[in-house]
Length: 258
Image (tube, rainbow, N blue to C red; front, side, top):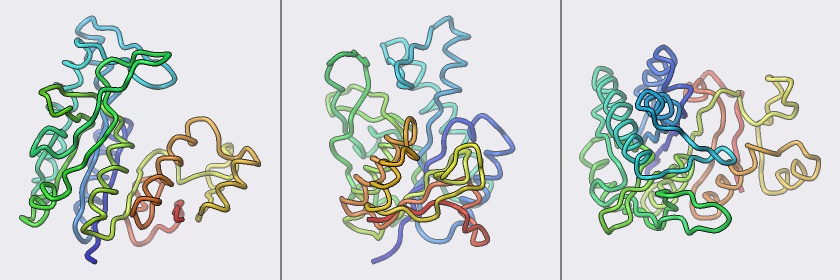
């Protein structure tokens, strides 16, 4: 099976021009077939504020009313996505920017209202791996923003980590898929106060122990649950660390396997 790398970057890289340029150079130099997924929440919050629209967050998740959805569509699907695509063209990577609505690539259901009404937020239900593969086979590099659609004309704000894992699961029907979650830390840390204490390998057994010992908690919990969900559904491995894990020289990051 041919290999496919799916890389996700967050808002901190997008907000810093130097970090973004460095990352996109590493991404362009990465061998083989690849897909990029990006967020853009910080930029959306800043622009919403300039427009006089208050951003409401609960437990780190954005409440997406109609006004906020308009801003997110403009910022994720327009400003951030097209800026990334333009920079990749300079680096000779023939990128194509997409939402989940484009080529019907990622469908979601609107999240049901339970204790919290998140508004126009989607939970991924279907990835059209055949359509996405047509782009890859044509030597295009897909760049997905964090927007999906419900198949009935409604766009939905969707968590970029989840899009990454679900696209990887879908593409594992055709490719040997690996995920790279790029963030500020060097990886999953044994001791949060020691930024060098990277746990290099985590599997199902070591994960249980890390949970029991309280080493993994808070914001890292949903990320790792997402990782194991992807691994159980066909993804080969998940890597977590800073952007330098895309180089051959750096081996100081976390790899998660079953």
